[in-house]
Image (cartoon, rainbow, N blue to C red):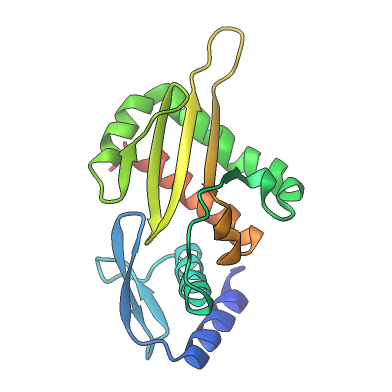
Length: 188
């Protein structure tokens, strides 16, 4: 319900930019962009969710405006422009559930994600994973196991240059999509 306007604006901008039909890998699966139908389709041919469609279309717009060139500077959401303002909501809706899922089944989830295209283990915390959300757009998930005194903790890092492709709200939604992908890896 809340994505009609961003979707319309994104399609209008992509029309202006002259976008052609294409496939865009998103979290390890190829989504088809159909300009004539103004549709983003999952690999199965079903319409993509509105959240995924907005992220993919905004990615195409951002990449058309500039080519993404990683800076090598990894930041957390709190370091993004106005990220501190949105942090409490992101922590509650995304980071906490991610930390809890990794606490319960972290090694299994990370193992399953390693088998998907665009995911791989890395060094850091008690467990760490790097996920390719979109071509060239990496998100690092670093996890510390909780114990009797401390709760589990997770952090998600992305390259600072991503804020040149996405607005802060889109970064939050992208992190939420990555967290959902990690959490749901064991369900599929």
